[in-house]
Amino acid sequence: MRSKFWKQIFILLLVSIIFTSCTLKTQKPSETVTTNESIQDEKTSNIQPTTQPSVQPTIQPTPTTAAFNNSNDKDTKPESKSLQKNTVSQHAYSKNNTAGYDNTLYSWWYKKGNGTIPEIPKQAENLIKKYDGIYAKKTTNKEIYLTFDEGYENGYTPKILDTLKANHVKAAFFITGPYLKNQSALVKRMLDEGHIVGNHTVNHPSMPGITDDNKLEEEIIGLERSYYEMFGEKMTFLRPPKGEYSERTLAITQSLGYKTVFWSFAYQDWDVNNQKGTEYAYNQIKSGVHNGAVLLLHAVSKDNAEFLDKLIKDLKAEGYVFKSLNEF
Image (cartoon, rainbow, N blue to C red; front, top):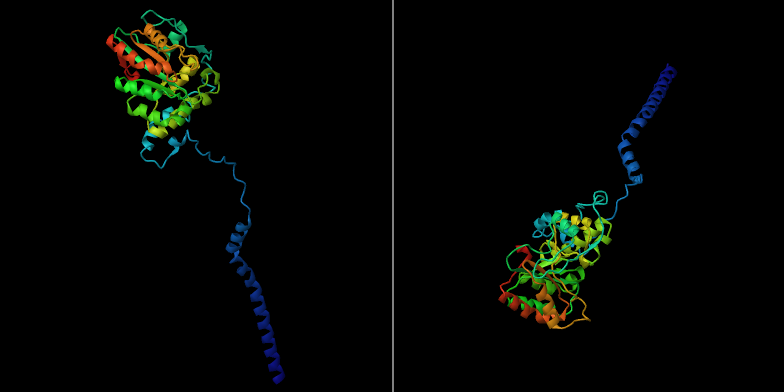
């Protein structure tokens, strides 16, 4: 009887052990499932990132572009927006849409008149009219527009400014990139005394010779950017370096918001080693004056600086009025 009892106990224990063992086996997979999320995280952390599309590094603005990229300057930000139409980012012209524009190089030329507006070639007259340029004003009034080209400083601009101020005359000064960089105090004085500061490009190149439209635009707008950065002012007048132009360059200049300014009188005053004296210079200009004249003088000329006061006084005595290009 006892043997039978213990036999039954043994069988129950064996069944219990077998059942427990089976239960543990069936639970093991479920434990693995509960760690799937952590395993996935581990796999993710071990996976190398996929190759991202190539991204060009951000180009730091050069001194000529900094003014239009200064998003922290609240005072310049609104004006910067208003100048967007004048920036190279717009690229109003490109190789594709300037293909129809003639890039034949012309040098500014006129036949001197006798107290009248000089005669210019028909093609020049047509292009100036088409692209809203300036070289002289057709008027019966005795008006004169005095302009100076400033490629570099030769020590005479302060005297010229003194003379203009003393005679209450406003002029236009066409500057280059190096002039702006090296003579910013003089440029500031021009502005402070009410003169126009015009664009003579960054590097004074022959504009038709720059066949890449973007580069040509940068010659123009690059100078304005630096100028705006310094003084918060726009430029609206441009004089083509060397007087060289084409239909294409006039079209691009106009598209950037500029008025091209040529001239109806100039003489060989830029050669600092061949100054012929104040009497010669004075007589040259007096013989070229006419109603609505746009006079081009170079500020590097010693003769110009010395006779300017007499010239202004004498012309005023004859009834001439000196006006700003803004009054053209």
